[in-house]
Length: 389
Ligand code: V47
Ligand code: SF4
Image 1: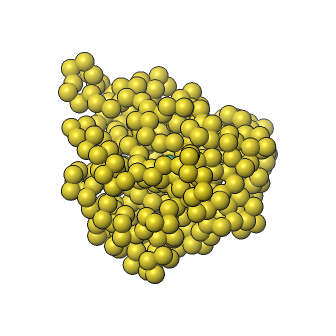
Image 2 (image 1 turned 90 degrees about the horizontal axis):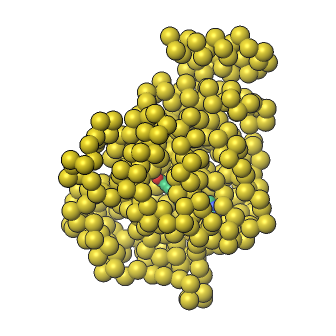
Image 3 (image 1 turned 180 degrees about the horizontal axis):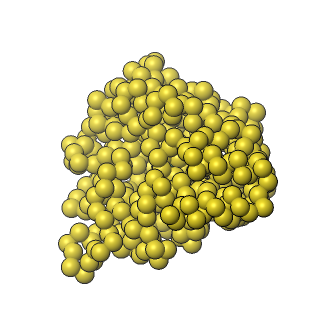
């Protein structure tokens, strides 16, 4: 009934034929084309995009907004690559600003969460020539010995391409070893923008677009799900964003292995692309909405709250977003160093729940694979022993 009401508003208004066709496709669960995606970026109004994206989100997830309890481990910020947008990495010669956690440091970090109800550890960092595949496989095995229940989401395709190359293993062989040692899934980083010309200008020396896609396909074939990201708001054009999403949509048709799509807004502090102005909130919301409309075979769309801040995260929930990542616990520096909204990203479960309730949605704690852990609609924090980070 509610859907029919919105639908008639869209179809009766003074929309052009093209926008009416796109709206009809959305309401009939049909896929929009590349050209239609570009048209949305170029000409669609924010309200129209929000109505369509919200319709899709509501149909899939009702009033649920997902989050998880996680922490990050960033083993090092040494990196052999030189991505122009990166504010975080240091070359081996810049020793004073670099860190390198020892195995003991990392295991102690895991131990520090003993008794806390975190369900996921997210491990990513720079690409260090001395930290190879077998080192990381062993590390994961030890993490799992301490916390067998933790879901290990680890290593971007960039790190994996380097590790497999150095170990002289195919992607499948390398991933199989990591899986056997306890790695459960892959995060979505390193995708940036797949268009080869843009990639050449912003991250020429790291894994190519086709390698990124091959690695995720190999992971999916081994039963390891993954996420996908898109770095937007720098030198790319709208057509590059749509091309990027289209390559992901095609792989998802083939493997169904992606859990969630995460648009990442380019932040310009302290990197070689600082001269590029950041896009504004309206562009962020338009981008979320178009992602939700275009990526019809992705179940979830995530807004990464430390990057865009709490207010924009709340707004994004009206533009197709159903997932806001996790408590994080101030354990990532990647965005802080690039000038992200949240300089000490950490929210307690209670704060995350309130953030969601303020916009009249139902906060749902999930595990990495989106199984429901707790429905917080009527949760009493005062009478709960579960109130931990
Ligand atoms: O690939 C680096 C991005 C990514 C900047 O899978 C920047 O759940 C903006 O992939 N401005 C790595 N973005 C992080 C990542 C991620 C984050 C959160 C959740 C998940 C997940 C994955 O960070 C890189 C790059 O695209 N990045 N520098 C910057 N200046
Ligand atoms: Fe290295 Fe990743 Fe930074 Fe690129 S984005 S320089 S691969 S840490």
